[in-house]
Image (tube, rainbow, N blue to C red; front, top):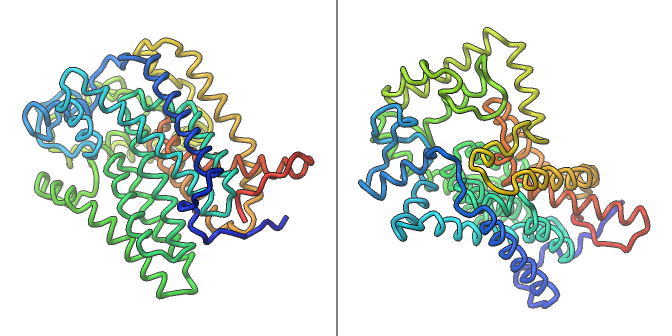
Amino acid sequence: MVLSNSGIRKNFLREPNVGTWLPLTAILLLGIILRVLVMAVIGSARVPWELEFEEIADNLVSHGQYYYSFYHLGSPRPTSFIPPLYPFLLAFGRYLWQANGDWVVKSLQVVLSCSVIFSLYGLAREIGGSARQGHLVALLWAVYPPAASYVADLSTVTLESFFIVPAIWLVVRAGMRQSYSSALAAGALISLAALTRSTWLVLLPLSLAWLAWYHRHARAVMAKTVIGLGLAGLVVLSPWITYNFRTHGTLLLTSTNGGINFWIGNNPKATGEYVFPTEMDQALVTSVANWPEVPRDQFFYAKGIEFIRNSPGEFLNLAAHKLIYFFLFRPNIGSNYRAAQISLLDVASVLFVVSWFFLLPFALIGLAHVGGHWQEHMLFVLIFLSNAGVSMLYFSGTRFRTPIDGLAMIWAVMGFTTLSEKMGWRKVDAVVA
């Protein structure tokens, strides 16, 4: 099937067309209302333990120090255990309104999550979709249960989505439009995502490689976009890299929690999901609590590698389970909410599962019909595969996939388009050209 390529190059974001912006405004309002309702239902319920970024945020507010105590097992000290953006955001909320600082953050997360509506619309249009199809993609994000639910939680998911979705859009623009400014902005946003959750750093070399391949026949354009994206990413990372070097005396791009997370996913008691470290081996975790962070990080990586060497079959079995959990769902979905005693837990878990399984078959059909924009969709596939690979190495969770579920929504709209045309339904313009 050959699809139309008309209108791809026009700047659709400046369209004065009421038919474009009125539906987007309605979708935005729907997204806001849904997220506010979710916040009202969840209320102040939370997990019964203090999260890492909460302790760091409290130390920032109380003492002006980026300190952490390694699960309260050691003494608080200057830390790089987790990237800085979410702890600073949480500290800002608690500083601004001491009694209700978390509600400040959650309210901001409503705004950030709903802004993704526009980014997904722009990404769908960038690869040739009509306004109607952009609206469908935006609508899916507005009502998507995981996207709506995470705004009511102290979690990095919403902030990750806020950075990652427009970053992907801008990488595509840098490729399709040979745009240097888009490359710069994409590099900056990817690094901001990595400073929110460190595993997003993988998107930086992936985007550089994709741009180099995309512009392989135009070396001047390749150099401009690749160097621009890489330099912007490095500039944004540089203050944190400098802090890490001054704190630990070694080059460190993001965080020192990789080792403990690698060991959580690769040890004799590993399940493929997150398990609190002391539940795995309390004596081992406690014994290194007061070690310097970098040697402790290396120690846990070594323990995980030791497990892989000694039990390769068990490692492969765990990796297969993690892969399934990434693309589908982990068995204990909702366990954190269960610990928080949140009402309507069973309903929320069902909605998470049902919404993904609703998207999945349409997305697979759409992915099989990407048409002339297969190069851009190859980037999407690589992003999914790279995140799946990270989950296979560490552990899986729904929150790790949620920021890129919007890509599956684009494929799902493509799949719906394909089915509607083949079954003789009312024709919908294809998402890709």
